[in-house]
View (cartoon, rainbow, N blue to C red):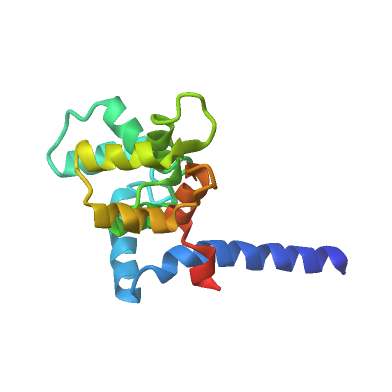
Length: 172
């Protein structure tokens, strides 16, 4: 009895974890993604593999796709690309948020000692003077989400989690 109860609980947990990606899209969009997935999954086994991608490119007239390109596409899924993973990848791309590990890697460039923190003032200076320059208002908006300790350091690991998963306070 207890093992059956635990099994049901695990199944509900699995359903809950993958239901988030399905809630990001309208039912009609999910159907369109299913059709696209079916077109790419050439052997109809429910998983997109390198040969499926190669054949799809071939049907589109591109015959000289190299293995590195195909591997890079498959590695975005960080494992077998079934329909749920496929939908998640599109959700990330359409949402405009990079995966958490990508954001963490960017922050680590500013943390050569690997402390998990970056100085708020120095980071502000960089945001306002480098590349796509932030305005003071944009920096203030970004820092409103950031967990900043009393010494003025940003806990960028917590910030990355908030960016990719949402603020716990917003969801409660």
